[in-house]
Image (tube, rainbow, N blue to C red; front, side):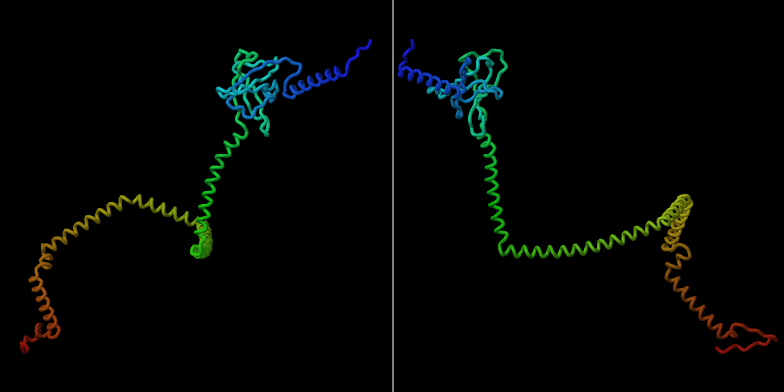
Length: 316
C-alpha cells in the first residue's frame, strides 16, 4: 500500500534539509569541523585588532581550529575570544594565543604559541593572550623616524638654497669669477713650475748617472781619505808634541813681550826710555854726518907722508 505524502509534508521536509545544509555549510565556512569532536579555549584581549569569528587558529602554520565567538565585557572593556580546537590538539597551560596578520591585506588569525608545562588545558579553560606587531605598526615604527629625518633634511636643503641664492648674487658672482681667474693663473704657474721641476729631475738624472760613472773614482778617493785619516791618527802623538812645543814658544814670546813692555833689559829701556831714544837718535845722526864728511874729505882724517913732511892743516 503506497503512502500518500502530501505536498506540504514534502515541502516542509525539503525546507528542513535545506536549512540543515545551510547551517552546516555556514559552520564549515567558519572553519568548524562538521563531523569531528572538538573543545574550546578562551583568551582575553584589550584589543583584538580586527579579529572576527571564523578566523583561523593555527599552530606552526597548521590550522587546528577557528575563532568561535567574541564577547565584550562591559565592566572591564576586555574582549573574550573563544576558540574551537580539534580534540586531539593538546595545549600546555603556559601557552599563549597570539593574534597576528596572516596576509598583506590585514586578515587576522590566531597562532597558538605552545608552552613547555606538562599540565594540559581542558575544555573551556583560559589561555594566555598576546598580540603580534602588525605590518602597519612595523611600517609606522620604521617610517616615522625616516619622516623626522626627511623633515630635518628639507630644513637643511632650504637653508642651503637660501645660502646659494646669497652666494649667487651679482656681487658674489663677480667675486667668484675673479677667484676662478686667479685660480686659472695659479694653475698656469703650477704648470710652469712642474715643467721646471721636470727639467731639474732630468738634470738630477744626468747627475746621478755621472755619479754612477764616477763611483770608482769616488771609492778610490774614499780609500785615500781613509788612509790619510789613519796616518793622521798614527801621527797624532807627534802632532801633539809639536803643538805643545809651539804653545811653550808662544808662552816664552809672551813673557819676552811683557818684559819689553815693562822696560826690563836693554831692549826694554830702549823701547820705553824716551830720552835714551832721543840720544841714540842724535848720535846716529852725528855718526851719519861724520861718515858723509869722511867720504867727502878723507884727507882731513887720514895723513900719509913718505919723507916725514908735515902737511899743512886744512883750512877750516
